[in-house]
Length: 202
Image (cartoon, rainbow, N blue to C red; front, side):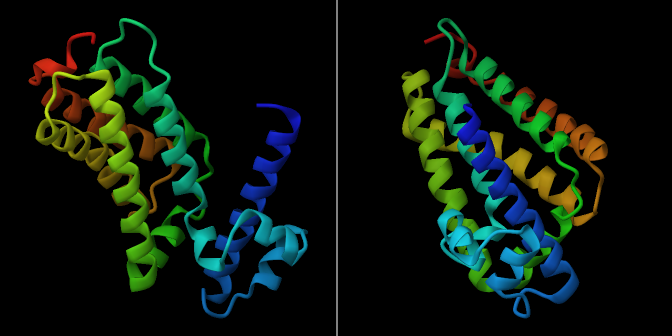
């Protein structure tokens, strides 16, 4: 990642962090985009160059993590089994989660759980991402049929997502979240090891 990209990522994360802090302190409806921009020390115009709306800022981390997973799945070394690919991508995901301070994870989850419009957006994001994951899995494990691929993605990333969401609801810190997610990863891998198509190189 070049300097320009790193600066843009820092600005994006600063805006998202300021937004979640204000949502926690003032409430979602009570917080304006001008409030968020001021707290992040950017202009409202800069806010809109990173996020189309106030709703989208709630999903900043989710969008980033889903993009990382998609990239990791696609960047598969030659000879790597689909199970090894899943393990590599999952471990990178857990490292990224552990690197976060986790301060506003519970706020993010609470906002999504309490607002039907945000629930719908979260479901759409996750559904679109999982469709993309299925397509990549079919490419790296062509012997799997559609039902097997959909089920594997549902078990694999659904399991990790459920564990991480639970940890945030419980307000676990980053290290405890990582430990719980690693347990979930071990359980998921036990299930996937029973599927021949994911334990052999393509």
